[in-house]
Structure formats: structure tokens, C-alpha cells
Image 1: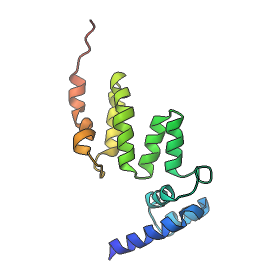
Image 2: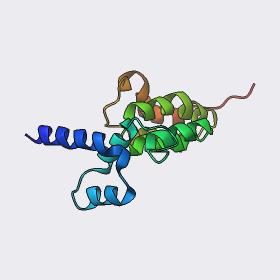
Image 3: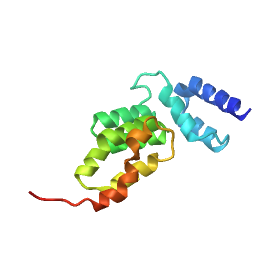
Image 4: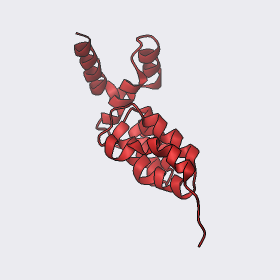
Length: 143
């Protein structure tokens, strides 16, 4: 029964997402206790043009990525619970750069935020965070 209520609420949010104002969202989240992630997901899935709803996390993420603000795009995907998109950015963009810069703290932060969420291919690509103890043992050699 709870699943059918959840589906009904998400369906209604998807239909109404284009017209949700900040005030309405605050009411849904504050008074009705609807998770903000559901509201953000509905906004992301709405079919409105980019300029009309630049405030949706997906559009903000796309724009941030196009402006080379990759971590901001990652953060927006996470805030909308778009775990696969966030994972793709982490593995393809953020992790390689962090490894080159030897920024182990950034690697830990990124993959800790993703850990435990449903992500396609996590066992093939996202388990990098489990290698973190190995990363600390890696030595840099100069030629």
C-alpha cells in the first residue's frame, strides 16, 4: 500500500512539476513532508525548455558541466538523487583528476556520497572508494 501511495505522489509531482513555485515546494516539503528529492526528481523529468526551468537540478547540472564546473554538476545530480548521472561524472571526470592531483580526500568524499545508493555498474566502476587504503600506500617515483 505504501508503494502505491509513493507512486501516486510521484506521478502527481511529475504532472505538476513545471508549475511548482518555491513557495509551493516549501509547503510540500515542510507541511506535507514530501521528500525534496522527489520534488527535484519531478522537476528534472519535466519536459519544459531549459530557459523556462533553469532552476531544476538537472538543468543546473547540465549548465554547470558545460561551464566546466564539474563538481557543482556532480553535487546537483546527488541533490536530485540522480545517482547514475552523479556516478558517471565521478568516475569519468572527477576521480581521474583527483588521482592525478593525489587528492585522496576528494576521492573519499565523492565516493562516500555515492556509496549505498542504487547505481548501475557500481561493482565494476564505483568501488574505487574501497581502494582508498591502497592509494595511501602508493609511492611517487621520479624518473
